[in-house]
Structure formats: C-alpha cells, structure tokens
Image 1 (cartoon, protein in one colour):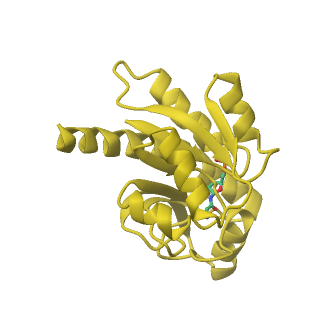
Image 2 (tube, rainbow, N blue to C red):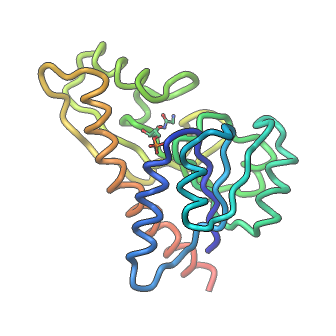
Image 3 (tube, rainbow, N blue to C red):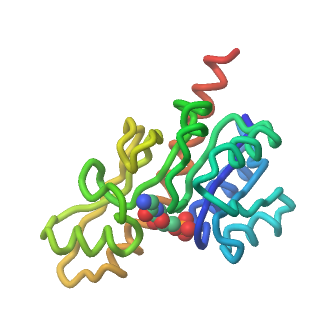
Length: 193
Ligand code: GAR
C-alpha cells in the first residue's frame, strides 16, 4: 500500500507513523509522499531527511491539482496528520473510504470547522469534561464527521492547561495513529488479495 501523508505543522504524528513502519518486520505500507499546504512545515523536513518525496499544496481548495499529485505518486491511502485544510470533494470521492484523519478529542464531541490544536483542548477544559482523547476516523467532505475507526482516552487532570492536556493527548495520538493505520492497511490489503 502506498501512503501519502498530508500535514500542516510539525508532523510528530507523521514521525510516529514512519517509525512504526521502519520498525515493522514486514511493513504493509510505505509513505511515498508527504505534502503540506505550508512550505515551512517541519513535516516536510522530516520527509526530506528520509528521502521521501515532498510537495507543497499551493492552493488547498484546488481538488484537481491535489488529485493529480496523488495519482502521480500512485497513492492508495491518504493519511491526514495535522492537516488543517478541508480535503476537496474530488479527492474525497476518488479515495472514498481510504482517507484517514486523527483528531485531538473524543469525536463527535469537539469537532468541526475551527476545532484544531489548542482550540480543541480549551473547549474541553471550558466544558469541564473529566476525560479527553484522540479519534482516528475516515474522512468525508465535512470536517470530523466520517466513521470512527478507533479512539484513545486520557484523563483531564486538576490544574490542566490547554498545553498540558494537549501534550497528554498528543502522546496518546502517537500510539493510536500508527496502530490503527497499520491494522487498516493490513485489512485493506487482505480484502484486495
Ligand atoms: C495533532 O494533535 C492532531 O490531532 C491535530 O493537529 C496536531 C498535529 O500535530 N489535528 C487537528 O486538530 C485536526 N482537526 P503534529 O503535526 O505534531 O502531528
């Protein structure tokens, strides 16, 4: 399975995925492309260090351009790892059921447009919830609404700030995303064979 990872920021989730694939005895997938809407995203640097092809998505709303890029790299599965732009409808349609996202909360709570990064953790704290977590789900053309594949739970502790809660959630993401992605591609490969 050929994976493309789309990321807007640091790419620590990309890193955890690359490490899981690198240490897997028989990796069921390889990352063939890392693309970002931000030329300065550290995720691109992580890819370059490993000689993985990179691309800057100049106009994230241009579905035809993103579709062409993914086709050029013969991508089977698209992995959103901190990608903060909506995936255009053309791409969602062509890779239907084959685009995964990770969200730093327990969806369906705290999802939707504008709910990313610290905004999510601030909303969880403001709601007084006693737990949060991370969700891996399939992507549809609406933010954070596709079928849920897996979740990890973390406690909200007394005195938490958005930063301390965010760090706890991110640590859970780094375990959840590679595990869920690997089992997703293994099942998909089995179905295809
Ligand atoms: C992660 O916490 C991810 O869940 C979140 O962005 C962060 C990216 O970190 N994604 C969203 O908020 C999507 N709505 P990373 O660049 O270090 O992987």
